[in-house]
Figure 1: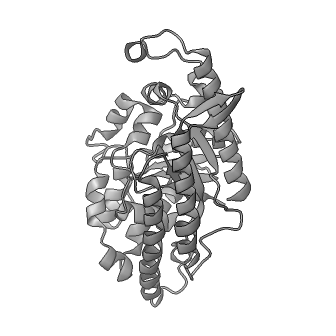
Figure 2 (figure 1 turned 45 degrees about the vertical axis):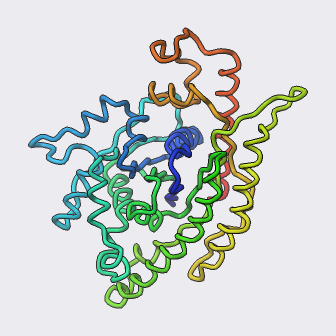
Length: 352
């Protein structure tokens, strides 16, 4: 059964795109078929996976492809004409993966799409619930066209609580929350605890109205139940003492603050959702993955369209980095973080 996972935080700069990309590779290396949905109008995931030029080519329109070869080609006809458009997936050029890895490229048009969606009419009124489950429809069509059953769908999202985020969460089985060591991450965790129950309340109102005339719709009955899958602590620094790594003091303080917000705000708020259990039994307050600050390696990974797992076999981008090879400590850190993504992939595959 396909599991859909949103990687979400309403705070920007927490590393959602990098986490999704590297996690997807680790899941594929577990012989899983993975579909990426770039649902962020910034389209950073598409650029990271495919490269700026290839992604730019997919945006181009022509008589044969009037909406390009992105998410827009499927979604715009559905919104304007109530018919499915064409689904296009691309494959990142990544070696050695066992499972399949595809991406539905994003599109800057998603900004306009988010304006079309109306919570009051489409969700609460119940008349447009299918407009709010576009990620599910994209997954079904990609699976049909590519003749593959995806084990996991990972969705990259903008840093907001807009309708794109609602749509993705309504379609998700789980969501992961990346956090960084800063003053606002714990605050934003609390906001997620406040907002998600309201999202679910809106969905339940609309679902009840919709089911009055469509009581046996299996798709609508199965949506609107996203569960908290855990949080990821990203971009923290460490120092070695007596040969053992320790989180630097300032980042440790932020870590403690975020964990407190998870414990005292997010989990209690989600536990109050009455229509389903939003906190699975395997979830606790500890982070499920700790990704250290990769510094220039992170940006070079994006520039070279190469995940951390394979970056050490690529020379650093000389024009950007000014050096001809990676230092030994950088290679060691890449290896350690690859193992951390493998651990996260195993956690998901075991529990989700």
